[in-house]
Image (cartoon, rainbow, N blue to C red; front, side, top):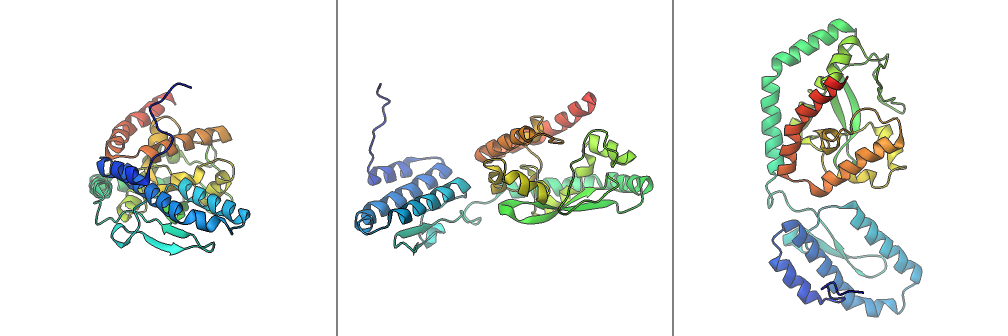
Length: 299
C-alpha cells in the first residue's frame, strides 16, 4: 500500500498542539473534545477493562457513537468552556458536552433573521391585507392556518400560513397537497404557486421558532413516519427550520409521493446542516425568488 503521509499513531499532546494551531473554531472544538476523550481513556481504560463485563463495554461504545451521530455542538470540558465532568454507571469518567455559549459567539444569523423578517413584514403589510381579504372572500373560515411542526432539537411549534385549503388538518392524519388537489381553494392555487402562503412564517422567524434559511419543517405525523424510514432524518433538526432552504433552491420541494423523493430532500438538508454558514444562507436567499419564478413558469 502506498504511503499516504499519515502516521498510524499520534500522541494526545501532539493533538492538543494541533488544536492550538487550528484556525477553524468548529474543527478546533471537535479536536479538543477528541483529545480529552483519548486522554481519559488512556488514563482509566487499563484499570477498568480488567473487571468490566464485555456487554457493558459494548453498550458504552454504542452510547458514545450515538452521541456523535447527533452532531450537537461541542465544547471542551470544564466550567469555562460550558462542559462538565461526571461518572457514568460503569465507573468511567464521562465528559458531558455542551453547546458554545451565545455570549461567546454572537449569533449573526439571528440578527439577520430579525432584521430582514421585521423589514419584510413592514414592507408587505399592504400585501398581507390584500391576501387576507382575498382568502376570506374565496372561502369561509379562518384566514390563517396553524399547524404543529417540529423545530430545533425536536421542539414542536405552531407554524403560520395563509389558508389555501378547504380542510384544516393538524393531527394523526395529514395528507400532503398534490397538483390539482381538489381541497385547494381558487385563491389557494395562486398563493401556493408563488409561495405567498408562506409569508406569515416571517412572524415565526421573528419569534425565534424558525430562521429565514433552514430545512423546511414537516407536519408532526410526517416527521414520525419518515424518521423511521430514512437514516439521519432527525439530523435536520440540529438547526432551526427555515422558510426556504438548500433543498428548495435545488428543486426538492412540493409533494413527496415516493420515499425516494423525501430521501432526496433529506440529503440536501443534511448537507446544509453540515456546511451551514452565512455565505451559504445569503446565496440561498438570493436564489429563492428565481426558483419560485422558475417553477411558476413551468406550471
